Image (cartoon, rainbow, N blue to C red; front, top):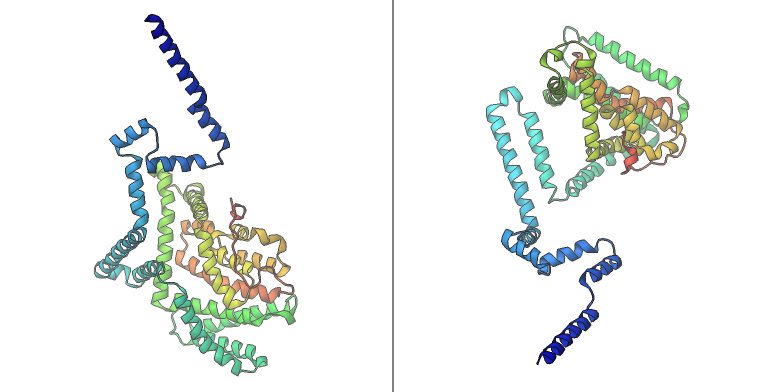
Amino acid sequence: MENSKTFSVNQRWKSEEAVSARTPDPAAHQHQDANQRPPGIEKEIYSKELEYGTGSSDQKFEESHTGGPAEGGRFKTWCRRYQMYIRTGKYLIIWLLFTGWWIAGLILRRKDLGWVVPFLVYLCITLRILFFYVPISIITRSMHWIWRNTARRFVPMIPEKYQTLAGAALVVAVILIGAFASPEAADNTRENRAVSLFGLAVLLGGLWITSKDRKRIVWRTVIVGMLVQFIMALFVLRTRVGYDIFNFIAMRATDLLAFAGKGTEFLTSGEVLKLPWFLITVVPAIIFFVSLVQLLYYINFIQWFIGKFAVFFFWSMRVSGAEAVVAAASPFIGQGESVMLIRPFINYLTMAEIHQVMCSGFATIAGSVFVAYVALGVNPQALISSCVMSIPASLAVSKMRYPEKEETLTAGRVIIPEDEGNKPL
């Protein structure tokens, strides 16, 4: 009997050994499969195990008691299924909140804040949410149709050789009417305005005389530049709406830069902040502004904003895309940083484009210099408005002094390369 029991045990042990020999080791099999799997397949297998319940028993036990990835998978599936409705609801809530803010501002703060700036902020937010669902081409096509059926119909009626002269006469008429029709002030008489206009004429005449090639001057760029500059000046200095808009921008910029003082006070003390030292009052604000610009670079806001801003000057003044980008960026981020936006094209810039890049940089002040002037007590509204008005003026002056004589690489397009190398730091 004992021999039979021993035989049965030995037979069972041998059979189990044979079965184990035929059955591969799970750890070794898993290691072998891991070596043969393509990269990234582990995450896919893990996600499928969670979805179909093929994970380990310990994992299933933990999920059943903690409500882990199983419930998370159902929640993610539900979110994907109703993603459009969730996004619509989120935008609707944001729009309703800003609508309430706008209505409350009109009722409670209209006397001190006015209605223009809150309305423009509310309008921008509303249009941005609307364009998530409605293509912006509806508006751009309508504007293009109006332009094509108004201005483009009248221009061909004028003989081609008189079109430039007619445009110049129109600009002169607008400048004269705007300069002499507005009421006088104690320090702003019509005699003073006449002296200023004479100085402008002398400046343009001097640029024409010293031009590199007077025959190649594109007068459309000069005419449009002078016209846009003067219209912007009238909008800021002679209208309440323009004054409120630029004053709002200046005040918000001042409030933003005041946070640098909070940081200085946090690191030192309130008594140190009261010291009239350049190192205490100006340098921290410059460091704060440069850091903020780098952050906006990282999230591609600077590239988006400047690209949209440059399209107008590219379309209206017929300059190359690189020139438009640098001219639009110079008042905000400075001369050196604006050139870095077109870093891949620097080696291919023509001499006229290089002249324009330098002219745009010297015509405006950078944001860090703006900080320094504001800290010294200069009116921030005058700084911002003059910098913006200098954009078309710098294009016009540069194209008179050094006209384009070569074929530009960025002609016909506005482009800001999306690479890490075009960032200033």
